[in-house]
Amino acid sequence: MRGILFLSFFLLSFIISLNQSLAVEVKCEGPTKYGSEKDYILNVGKNQIKVMTYNIENLFDAVHDEGRDDYEFLPKDSPEKENCAYQSGYYKTLCFKTDWTEQKFRMHLEQTKKIIEAQGDLPDVLIVNEVENVNVASQLADVLGYPKFLVSSGNDKRIELAIFYKEDKIKLREMKELVVKFPGELRIKTTRNILVANFSVNGKPNKVLGVYANHWPSQGSPSAARVAAAKILKKGIQDNVKKYGKDNYHAIAGGDFNTIDKDSPHPFDQLTDTLQDVETIYRNSANKNDPNKMLDKMPKGSYYYPTERAWNHLDHFFVTSNLVEGGLMRAGIENFRIVSAPFAIKNNFTFKNGKCVNGIPAKYNVDATTPEKAGFSDHFPLEMTIEL
Image 1: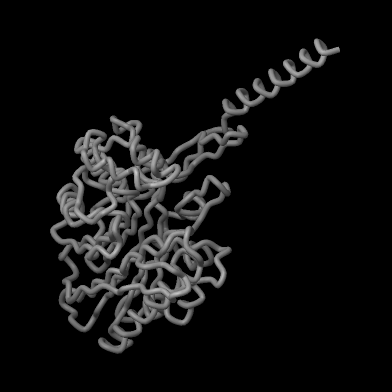
Image 2 (image 1 turned 30 degrees about the horizontal axis):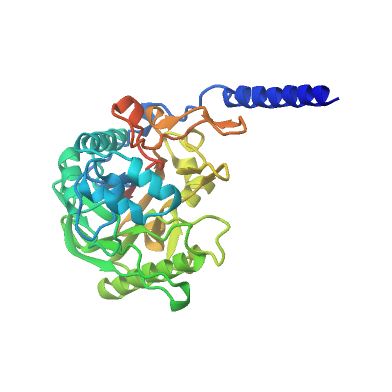
């Protein structure tokens, strides 16, 4: 009897093991391809500016900065690696395991350049999330060819925001940062500042375009933390409207808002009387005026969350109503794009249960030593135009 039970148990274990191994090898039905590479090339005229926002996923150099939590992104033989011991669980293991080098940093710069070049000429304004510091931003500016850039001041101990820009059509009037503060009961000390650049349009000094770079608290924080960020963004825009006049001041807010549909209270409810979501307008109506008919050539979102197997809209462009209505300036919402070029997507991402998904962002691989295996980012960039 015991022999029969043992044999039955052995056979059952073998079948389960075999099914699991077969499941892991299951392939998705055909690779997903959105638009062709040429579909994402967005050429603009002299009376248009192109704006892009991109979370480039942890662009760090390989040198420790005093006071910053950059220990994961250091070479394995760095004496500072001992600080990984202060991390916990998965992050502690990852910190010790990651061997980040100057060569890998340079490769990440080049991979970022490849994505940004996928949409054609350099955007007039580029909002970037997840740069480590001014040094990293400066090297990225050199690689991309930007003459000017701004970086947030370091309120976050890990990553910052940057705005890169060309001066062919706009000139910087002023730069400021909006500090996001939280109610005491949230027990959150700091988050990334909102970086603001106000630009004048060349030849038309009364036209002012405000660019707001955002990277709100992650989903690890309660929705109330993102509500607080939304309130600060709204107040910052309203203050500039008062300063420059509602007919002259136009604003675009871009970046990673880390907000999902089930957030409650929902942060975007704070913005409805001040800002409108560009992607929502594009999908609902403006796509009809898109000459390239990109609606069916884009993914459902800019970020794929494997844990819930769902597309998220973490990245956004919001614009003031006067840009939607048109006047001194107009948002070219018909030119909205989620830049999901064929080389930047990952197919056959397989879960442990054998299910798989196609067409998600090719996340950056910190262990890779060649561009072919490095990937790009866990986010796709967004782009649009402003008609001057």
